[in-house]
Image 1 (cartoon, rainbow over the protein chains, first blue to last red):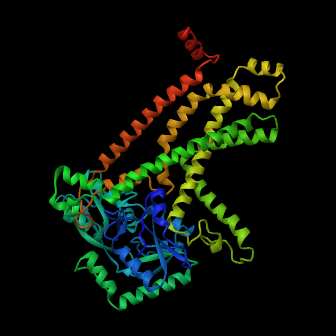
Image 2 (cartoon, rainbow over the protein chains, first blue to last red):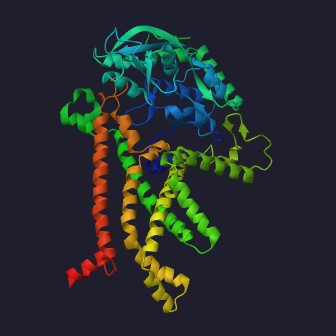
Image 3 (tube, each protein chain N blue to C red):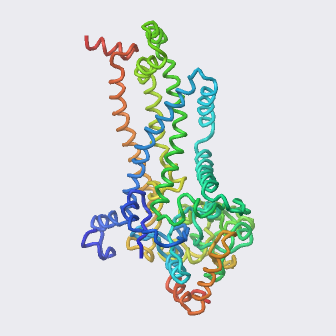
Length: 243
Length: 294
């Protein structure tokens, strides 16, 4: 396994020299690296999480050489389209709006619920709600009549609730769960969960049908032999929705 | 890094901190300071060179050259930095790929723009899709340096253009009277004397350049701001050995101190350079130095 070091070019220079370009095509996987447990940067400074393991496994099965790239969430689709990387693997829900611009693989994470988290269970869910920019959650809040407070990173959406700037944060429950558990009662779930989106899939350029079919095949295989369910349970807990 | 760091949850106080601050992730943070310094070290001379070319062109007697120089100064100075950075880097990247595409794949029959997608043949990708990650990072850094040099070059050009005009006309006329040609006057009389007039403006520009380095982050280069934000964010115990709350304030405070220290050090150095350049000049500063020595 080639070690992926995403730091300054200087450091990468020394580590990257060993990567021989003997293989044909390298597929570049773009992720955000700020959305645990889907994807995050671990203590070693490497991309880690459910999607890291999934992506590596998919590449192995599809016999592709893959390389990981970090990109900010709000420019993740434009940079895919302009060819900076070939696949988005960043907890991106499949929606009709996004499907007009890019293509999606089949879902590798079933449609789940998004949740409001606030300082008290009876928080005003029609008040100020924080959400990450260009997410389905931000779209939902905007339509719900509440005041939407957008942030570029998921981290900031939660910080806004802690500081009292927002009444509640609206995000994937999988992302909020570890934060609620670690907060020691400071943050709690408010209101009912809202089912949103059509599951999480890989984002691929519309012109890249061949790549999409290859990765789709690998996902089907992982669903069939249960290895995807094992991964889901490992990262999202025993009670998570599986295939 | 240290032996006792194997189980961080059992540690506390300074021992914990010593382990926390030496994780590989923090090393990446420290290395990113090198990235910023490297950017400055490359960009400052490049911008100065661009500025020199721009200023020389602007005061040229050939009309097209002078229009080109003045146009460059006016356009780049007039567009907001951020807009320029966001637009120019994408345009430059696609421009390079487009030119390579035309040169390398003459028999490619598919359109380059398919809906939203910008598609050139695989051989024309810059860098190649098969290149390792470090090539992509060096390429991105190169684009950033070029953009910085272009933007700050325009400001430098304006400063140098003004400085060239500030050199007393009598000096140039005297040189002419001695029979020097235009080129000799430019290199022997004008350029050595203009620096003292240019330095206040250039030092200002250097300060702005130091403070503009966080724009690197906008260009996708992982600089100190990216790592400060990433490291400072809340870390839950499930995903790290070093859980902590929202520490972004402390990381950003550290950046603030770093930038302050860096600009202060620059000020001290620039003051010295100014004293050196003033020596023997027909300016108030030069006159004061002469009197103090006498």
